Length: 397
Image (tube, rainbow, N blue to C red; front, side, top):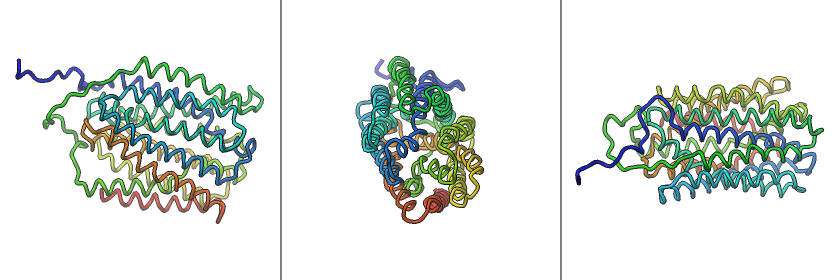
């Protein structure tokens, strides 16, 4: 019996069907994002009209929030690989986020919003690396793109339900934004229950890779090229300020505050519709090409926001913006999973997201400063140039 191989029952089955964990985590993403997006697209109006926040406050809030998210991803990724556990960290992150978000309803100043967003994004970061590693552990490598694409599509479906719910509830509540913040707690509670009781831990077993385990994406790359990839991602992230600046720009061009959830709805419809197909496509071609295409789309959209004079075209740009997200979000995660061995996969996700997040703080602060120092169009031109440069770098990766 001493020569008997370790049990493979816990390894992902080689099947075209995505496993239970992927589907449950996809539904968790839908519920969580419904709750988040019910509030997110109302924050610019709430901060300006109810709390009197200046444009620089947007950069401070969102930049700090994304930075702490990156550090919590790094920590939770390390902790997940150290303990060999994914589910408890994932579930804890979803729980903490959905406990703090409803507190927006009782805020009286923008610094209080800062700390709530800080806690929400810290919890998001804490769950991110273990969750992505859990998805990668649960699915056959040949279907990673489809798995991450599905989760991203469901996440974005929640981002459709969120703004739509916000629009309807604003009418129902007579424009009282705080009541919408309270209502957003309902899908959050369901999300907490589903992640704790529906997701299963996947026990990974050590095994030696064989040729049959290899996929077109699973070959190791030289450290120098990995550094080039991280440099390109960091450069892009330095210009990738908070999406709230897009809403501010739309309002700067004369669009009413009521359009913010509607713009979010349009963007997320495109994002949700294309995420799963993009993920499946990345299983059949180099994922890098889709990411490069996404960066180029981003550069074009932000150039459009810099040059725009007719507010009606904002709707078109928001729709195109959804294409950028669908080409990069899920595909990039599948790409990271391809490059990392199973026993350090959560750490790899943590490092990648740390690079993204560490650039997010100066990105949003810089965008707010450029807006106030030069013009509302200037930060979008700056972001467009950086994203184009990042796409060129990835061409050599």
